Length: 236
View 1 (tube, rainbow, N blue to C red):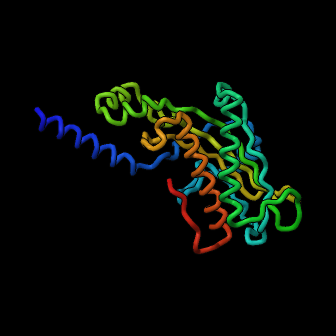
View 2: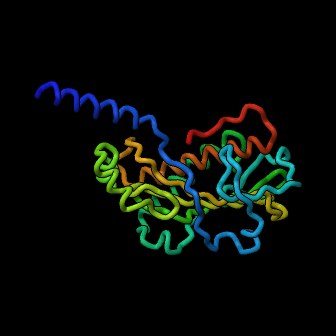
View 3: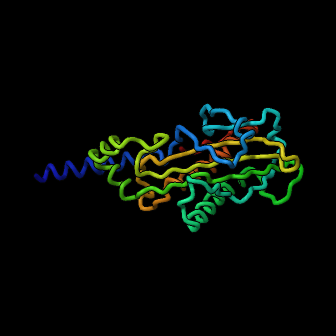
């Protein structure tokens, strides 16, 4: 009997260790259309092809990315619709502050953050379009008890293939020339949790991890657009 208990404990410990190495979030397979980008702007978007590209994006083929060395980083906005209407003002403030701080930290590594338009200045506006908290207790249960995972499978994946009980987040961005208003790039993306156990006591962990990823991915994509060879890929 003791051997079985020890064996079960060992299996659980090994399983938890393996889960710690899983990606914190993953890209969703669909997008939620909002009004943050106009209908004409949405029509310019095409499907991303990988290499940390958003689900939908637009890159101005005539943009001279090397000519920009400064950014006006607008306060992160929240697009209020059915995807965010149930999030409290306090949580929305927390999420926008969290997203902005990581975007600011990532972009200041390559650009000067400024407040006025001028030569070589881009303007970046990020909008939270979806924010759904996870259920930390349920995350733990479905992560370590196979029978419950099967039950989740019976209930099916929620829209877009997000596993039950994990958080999800949506973000849209528009980057323009600060002087002319010319659109340089746009992106629409969604990410969902993967039952990673790190941060499992924080119901907003999956959403926060998505913001951390998007901050790093924004820096990476801009680096690639400048044609540099030492661009640092974000962790998924």
